[in-house]
Amino acid sequence: MINNLFAQDSTAIKRILSFQQELNKDFTSEETSPLIPKDLERFKSLDFFKIDTSFCVTAKFVRTPYETPFVMKTTTGTEPLYVKYGEVHFVLQSKVFILNVYQNQGLTTEPQYDTYLFLPFTDLTNAESSYSGGRFIDLKIPEGDSVLIDFNTSYNPYCAYNPRYSCPIPPEDNHLEIKIPVGVKKFKNESENK
Image 1: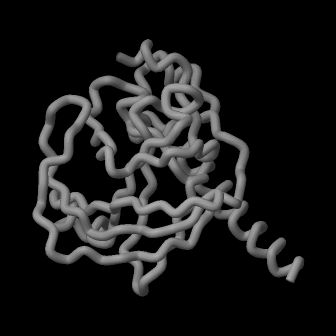
Image 2 (image 1 turned 180 degrees about the vertical axis):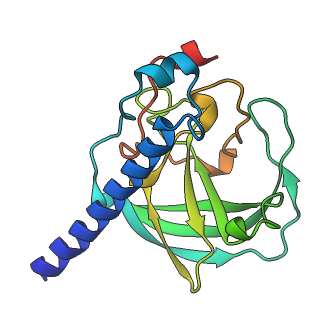
């Protein structure tokens, strides 16, 4: 059993490190980086919390098929259309949580995004050690009734780095009343980017 747990942790850590490398690669490239030019010149790496596999949870996925599309609030007032695609039910730190997962209706016609789901959330680290506006996790539509949610892969919206980006604001229903000290940390002084 101990070897199995170690193997699971080892696999999770490799997946998380791969996520971090890919994200840093995107931020290093002039074509894909959201950074303003002066920050891109100095950029070495994003600041990540320490990896903690206890924040990798298998959640029960509950499809909500009859939801009405709605305009999700954004940082700039643009009006992207989303639909609540389902809910994820999970236990973290001995507490039960339910978060909503969304599908961007503007992306459903693009083949590379047709299985993409969006999990925005806020938690008690916001404005302290993580971005004040919350963080995001990308998910794929699960084939069954469970989905892996790895908070170690939570990342900041692009508007945390550059005010020219319009970013969805996590709905109030997606607030976690605990600290999620994993994933990407706050980027330097947020007020410099406003």
